[in-house]
Image (cartoon, rainbow, N blue to C red; front, side, top):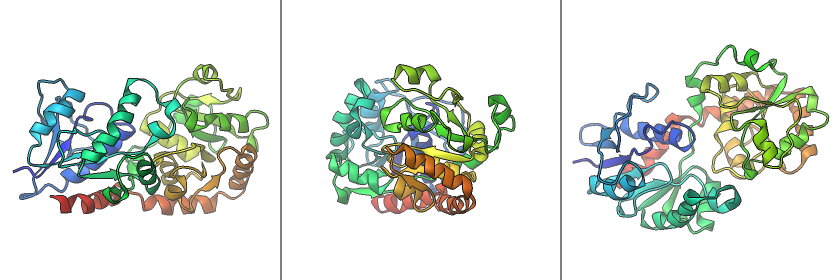
Length: 354
């Protein structure tokens, strides 16, 4: 009899963000499947194998209600009857009480103006209901746990913290032509990740680099929308800022490895993968003293008031003057946040329930 069923609705949707972490967590469970410990990964659709996750061999089980929410909420509970159902992407079927659900953050409650539309409304309505029905809840930081409790999404005794792994960035070699393609020089730029969402706080970095760029560095914004989208959102990017658009893992790794500093100004994060990815790549980090960043970065990043432009400028100057200690601390912190460690912690929580 199958003792654990993994909700594989995320398979085939492009592994980024929550879906990427779901693949790592699912692989950690699948790697523990042995005779007498039957673990199945169910998905509503056939997809090509992912070479990065060879153990993710899903059992394709289509249903009468499509391959989206109908499959997850109606078909999956019947398929998982009698098993512990594990869900890694915030949602879980309310019809299956013997379930574990990973809810990554409470962002739709903390910053509702950045999350509008039908999906955000559904999250705000469903998450408390899913949390009440679930047997147990996982989340990715103590900060996220406190946020979930504060917004009525589970009680503290029902929530376990499993820190994400971060070493996936090292699986893909850096693309050697990255700097030439974007017209930048190694250690001649500060790197940030792009988003027009207000809580990502890119407007703060635009202010910091607007007039006299700190240490003569150019601001490079990787991923996210083009310049005109920021202008439409009421932000004013520096004239010489570079917006790369979509970046592959190899391009992102090259940008991390060659940046003078990585800047992460978010007002809140449930975990925040990018600062630790940068640490893996030997890039010193300056992050906002907000959300899960003090917990995740620990003493390996310079933590700054997210609203103080002068503090950001001063921190960039300090890191530029002495980057080596921050690089060393970053490597040490990143080494403790691996997917192997995350998988072990996950199994410590899941195993007693089977």
